[in-house]
Amino acid sequence: MTATAAAADPARPVTAEDPAPLLRINNIEVVYNEVILVLRGLSLVVPKGRIVTLLGANGAGKSTTLKAVSGLLRTEEGEVTRGDIWFDGEPIKNAEPDRIVRKGIFQVMEGRRIIADMTCMENLRLGAFTRRDREVRRDIELVFSYFPRLEERAGNIAGYLSGGEQQMLAIGRALMARPRLVLMDEPSMGLSPLLVGEVFDIIRRLNQELGITILIVEQNAAASLAIASYGYVMEQGKVVLDGTAAELADNEDVKEFYLGGHGAERKSFKNLKSYKRRKRWL
Amino acid sequence: MNADLLFQLLLNGLIVGSLYGVVAMSFVLIYKASQVVNFAQGEFLLIGAWVCWYTLTAWQLPFVWGFLFTLAFMMLFGVLIQIVVLRPLIGEPVISVIMVTIGMSIFFQALMKWMFGVFAQPFPPIFETSSVGLAGLQIKTVYLLSLAMSVVIMGGFAWFFKFSKMGLAMRATAFDQQAAQSLGVSVRQVFALSWAISAMVSAVAGVVVGVVNGVSSALSFFGIKVFPAVILGGLDSIIGGMVGGIIVGLLENIAQFADSQWLNLGNMYRIAPFYVLIAILLIRPYGLFGTRDIERV
Image (cartoon, rainbow over all chains, first blue to last red; front, side, top):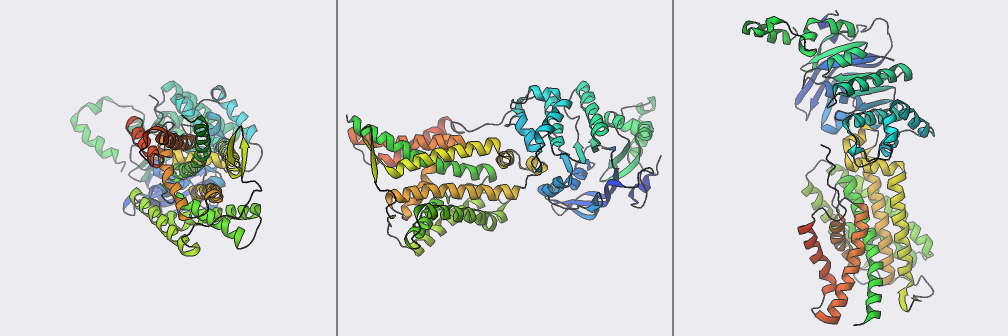
C-alpha cells in the first residue's frame, strides 16, 4: 500500500513502471465563483495506455477534477487557481475546452449528455467535430463494430434510446474524436448491473485494442477497479489513498466504504465512532 | 366577391410572407444559438438595404456586385455586433440582453436617418420589366426573385443544419451548450456565426423590400412583424419561423380582403397578425413547431 501522505508529492513516481505519464495533475486547487474551494491540492498521474480510476463519495470533487482537465470548468465559473496540469508534456491548465479536445482529451460527461433531439448518426458525426481528415466514415464503422446496437438505431432520435444505448452513444461519440485520453464521468450511472458489466467490458476493450488511455470517475468501485490498473480515492478535494487496483480492492477501508463489505462489528454504536474516524482516512 | 383580387392578394401574401419567413428564420437562428431575443432584427434589414442602395447609387456598382458587397458587409457587421456588444453580456440576465438589443435598434434607426436622411429613396431600376403577367395576375419581377431567393435560403438552411459540421454544432450548442463544448465546439465561434448568417439573410430581405418600396426607416417595421411569425411557428423552430412567416403574410392579405369586401373596419391588414399571435399564445404557447423537451421515462 502506498503511503497516503505521499500522494501530494509531485516528484514521486506514481507507477514505477511508467516514467512518462500522459496526464499529470500536480497539486491543483480549484475555486468556483472565486470563493468556493473545491479541490485543495490534488495530484494524480495517468500513465499512457492505462485505465486509471478515481473513486470517492458524492461531493468529493471527482467531476471537478475531470472538468479541470477538460477545461469545462470554465463554463461553470470555475478556475484552477494553483498547481499545474500537463498533457503529454504540455501545460493545459485553464485552456479553452475546444483547444483541449483538439489536443486529444475527450470528456464523456456525467449523465451522458447526448444531443437528444438529433439522430444517433448525427451525434456520432458531431463527435468528429474537431477532425479535418476524411476517415470519419470509417470510424463510424469502427464504433458500430463495438456497439452493434447503435448501428440498428443509427437513424433514431437519440433522446428515445434506452439508458444503456445512450451511454454507448456517448462513448461511441467520444471514439469519433480519436482521442488519446478519455475522461469518463460515472459511466455506470443509471444502468442495470448487467449493462454496467457490458459497458465496462467495452471500455476495457477500447483500452486494450485501440490503446486509448482512460481515466474513470466512479461510485461503482467494484466495476471500475475490475478494469483499472491503478486507482485513487478522493475525499474533500484531495487524494487520500492510492494504489494499484488490486491493492485498493483488498484495502479494508475501500472494502467497507466503497465495496459494501462490512463485518459484524459495524452493528454496535460504539464502533460507529471509529467508523466515522476511519472515514476521514487519517 | 372579387376572385381576381383575392388571388392577387393571396399571391402577394405568399410572397411577402416568405420574406417574413426568411427574416423569422434569421431571428430564430440567433435565438436558438445564443438565447438572445434580437429586437434589432428589423434594423438589419434597414442597414442591408441602405448599404446596397449606397453601392448602387454612390458607387454606381452593377446590382449583382452591390448585392454581394452588401452580403459581405453584413457578415462582418453581424460578427462585429456579436463580439463587441453581445459577447460581454454572456451570463448576464435576459432582461439586460433584451434592453441592449432594443438599444441597438434605436441606435441604428437613428444612425441610418442621420447618414441617409429621413426620406424614402428609390432603388435604381434593376429589372427591365417591373412586372410580369402570370395566369392573369400581375407580379413584380423583384417579387419573383424574392420568392426564388426565399426558396434558396430555405434549402440552404435545411442543408446547413442537416449535413454541415458547423450546422450540427450550432444545433448541439442550442440544445446543450456545455455538452457541445465538451465535443470541441467553440461556443464563441457558433455565436459569431449565427449573427453573421442572421445579418446576411435579413439583409437579403431588406434589399428586396427596398427595391419594391424604396429604402426608408419604415423597413424596420419588418422586425416587429417577425414576432407573430416566430411565436406562431415556435420560438425555437427554424422551419416554424418560415411557416409562421408565410401564414402571417397570407393572413394579412386575407384580412385585407375581408376588410375591404365586408367589414370596412380599416387597417385590419396591420392588426390581424397580432390577434392571431394572442390566440396562439393562449392555445399553443410553444407554437406550431416549437419543441417541448423529450422526456424519456
